[in-house]
Length: 311
Ligand code: HEM
Ligand SMILES: CC(C)=CCC/C(C)=C/CC/C(C)=C/COP(=O)(O)OP(=O)(O)O
Image (cartoon, rainbow, N blue to C red; front, side):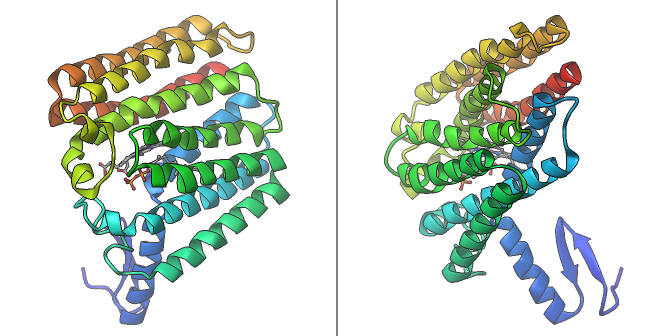
């Protein structure tokens, strides 16, 4: 359907306009948005929000939660920008990432650096002023681990995944500390689940894109060990420990209806474990993609069950 010159439409997830200047502005804003790795950040925010509700089920302050999520989104988006700034030349050599705004030349290094610093400062200040210092410090720690430590390690050692998993797990704790509740064993157990979840999640991805990673010089486990056995084993180990760690909240006093939660946790974790074992033995793209999809279903499903038994 033709648009009038002033209309703006959402097409394939992007805002488009008929009017050329408006279209150029929207296209640039979309590129800035893509720099934040929005789907990863969105799942992080869902996890953080759910954790806040679990931490303070009957005393959640919606305004504080909003500020916590806004600040976390800014800091997480900044981290993704910093990561893409550092990896712009490597990203240009992988089909999966070559069309990103920086390697594709749609935005400049200086724009990205400025936006990265602006969103980091704004997000951190927002958390300090509207949430609390601990949440801001956790956000800064996650930013530093992801941008300054994990990103450079990607071309040096397969241990990069464990470091990235630490950065990926901290936003969960930010959701907890945003409520003002002290960090308990349950909080660390939830963060432990998110930490362990990232191994089956990424080992599947590392296998699917093993050739890209090899050509780009990334030292992922699938490149260091082309047989895929170590990839499969690391996915299994992460999935194996995921199950007992996810059961910790059930045995703690705060946990209501521990039996039903435990059955869900064992069932969901068991699926990830079974698919990890299947990927380890078959080591093909089909079983890797099944495992990746299952990990992306596991996290919201596990959080949903936790919320149901906590509220
Ligand atoms: C060591 C940690 C992690 C690594 C190395 C990693 C890596 C990746 C990569 C490379 C992709 C793109 C796959 C593709 O293009 O098909 C991806 C997808 C995804 N990741 Fe992860 N990830 C990690 C942790 C996380 C965490 C902590 C979350 C959120 C809680 C997350 C959420 C997602 C989501 C939602 C997708 C699918 C959407 C998309 O393709 O952008 N990941 N991950
Ligand atoms: C508050 C805060 C700072 C939160 C940070 C949350 C966050 C962005 C975690 C990243 C998890 C992770 C290692 C993603 C993969 O990046 P990658 O560089 O391996 O992915 P790529 O290969 O697609 O670039």
